[in-house]
Length: 321
Image (cartoon, rainbow, N blue to C red):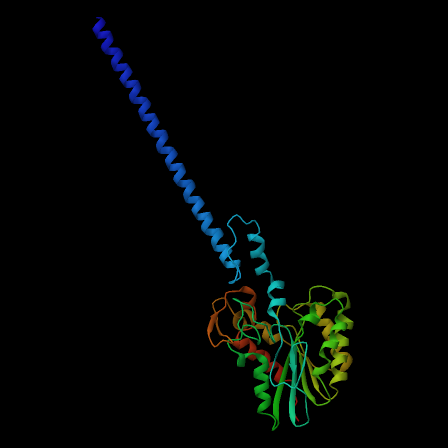
């Protein structure tokens, strides 16, 4: 009887040990699975952060640590329209030179040449921005000769026996200035009595200091008319995200000085379907290489068809002696 009890006791103890072992194995398995899942999530997060850092870094900079808290802010800064548009995406371009002011070469107009001065923002001329833009002409045109300034200049060459010169000036610093009238002095050297044609493409970068828009545009046109008294002056309507208050100020200045206003309705009507560039579009850079547009701000500018449309709308208003 005692032997049977002992045997039963041994069996009970063995069963208890087996149950304890199974429970431990189960707990260990669950723990290992949780660790693996946690590691996997950490790897995904690290890869995501590394990708974001790579996207937002300038090529010459060292990657930021993945614990850097400002990564989202850096990404936001690159995708905001004002940034793009903006100081880094604007510059001055030119052709032949005789005088130079503020780093921009100017052609001295003469009676023996047909002299064209184009003022504008990134649609007209643009500085090279590393990784985003690769030329100094109208942004998103696939090559220099396909922006609207070069198209208009080439057309002019077929309409006159004179050699055509072109000076392209950045007007963005005027757009963003609080005292726009103070900026006009920077453009004095680019006009004279022999200047034949002036086009003004502006407005897209104006988001502040709008209370003086009426007088600012009037003074801009007045300045050009005084410095280039014999030139035909054309004011272009906005080609990107037009604003009623800006367009009204432009029209008021045109009415005051008899300057034709170039309506951009045809361009705007076909903008999304036909005239807007796109991420993935390939353009030729000043380095002679092909580059793919990856920046949304650049992609929001006119493609070659859009540039051709703008050029034709301008040409429709030009009178060549």
